[in-house]
Image (cartoon, rainbow, N blue to C red):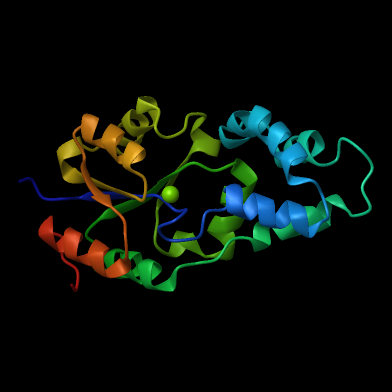
Length: 205
Ligand SMILES: [Mg+2]
């Protein structure tokens, strides 16, 4: 097996909570006293554009929340959206250890709108670990579209056999396997360490 040189990490459900998934959307929207179903209908229509950088945060909020007068400000809603995100320290400790070894190219590969992704990169200081951020909001395509995995290989100039992709969803992993990458279905920090060791990666089990 060729040596692993490169690791691509999903963020939501692996290193951080999901930034804006169904549970966080419902929690946030209902905390402002809004009807979740009405919001969810609108969200479904614009989510793809929002996550692939074709719609800004302001445009998204105009279409899903501020299409009528509200008793709260845009800033307060945006702050509440961001506050839905939490780090998973034990999982981040794994990438911190990988980064400290200096042996691997570490990149994110995740589906997220531009502004929320940028806010999470800043807030959780992800530049400490990763040198490259392959986010759907930047690239204009999202998982599980095959094109995002091909872009990841082209941008990093790596062969799939030297890459590992870590994600918490089977569908996203299947497409990486199709490209010939190694994959880890993330379940817990300890399981991740064990699987990385199994792939010949130098990390404490
Ligand atoms: Mg995920």
